[in-house]
Length: 186
Ligand SMILES: CC(C)(COP(=O)(O)OP(=O)(O)OC[C@H]1O[C@@H](n2cnc3c(N)ncnc32)[C@H](O)[C@@H]1OP(=O)(O)O)[C@@H](O)C(=O)NCCC(=O)NCCS
Image 1 (cartoon, rainbow, N blue to C red):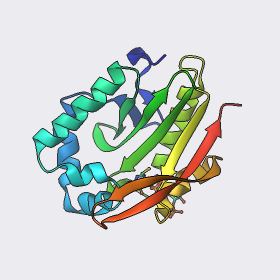
Image 2 (cartoon, rainbow, N blue to C red; image 1 turned 90 degrees about the vertical axis):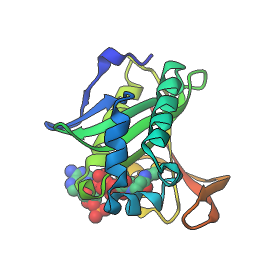
Image 3 (tube, rainbow, N blue to C red; image 1 turned 30 degrees about the vertical axis):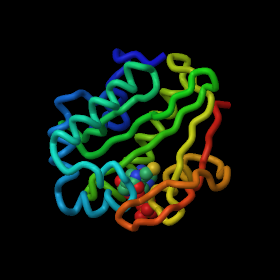
């Protein structure tokens, strides 16, 4: 089971994954509200489109903390030193099947350095460890989101096929299916 005392998870000397707390909402809101970040994130993440005010962000953080308390999710901040640079987490944890989904995002200036791949690798290591005991992890990517797809591909996930009928990306206003990638604890 996930225990708060296992954190932070260190990814590299300066990069750490820490559990999200309610006061983080303000920092996340500030980060995603910068124009260059909002432009890049809104294209792929519908939740970013829905966040218009700090109250919206606080509501979302509260929901993710509730999911953690119920054992359904693990919302984490990615920090470089003290600076918040993105997020990663486990979602839809199914303890009976031993499965969960991973999702991630980075602020624009933090892209292109391998941070998402390394953070994901560290989270997988933790999720597959005896402490947590999950057996299979999934990542869903928009078929045009080459950067997102690069993460599971670099980490040896296998492509499973297209899933989901109604994943909507509001900026584009279209309905698309997602590519599903999976990795098993061998
Ligand atoms: C998806 C997202 C997190 C991927 O970010 P990213 O920076 O491409 O991924 P990484 O941090 O793993 O970096 C990989 C890049 O760094 C380079 N890199 C440098 N050092 C590296 C290292 N040590 N290890 C791996 N890659 C490294 C890689 O070559 C790659 O660059 P390239 O794509 O130009 O070849 C980011 O694009 C994002 O936030 N997108 C918007 C939100 C989103 O789509 N989320 C996914 C929804 S599931």
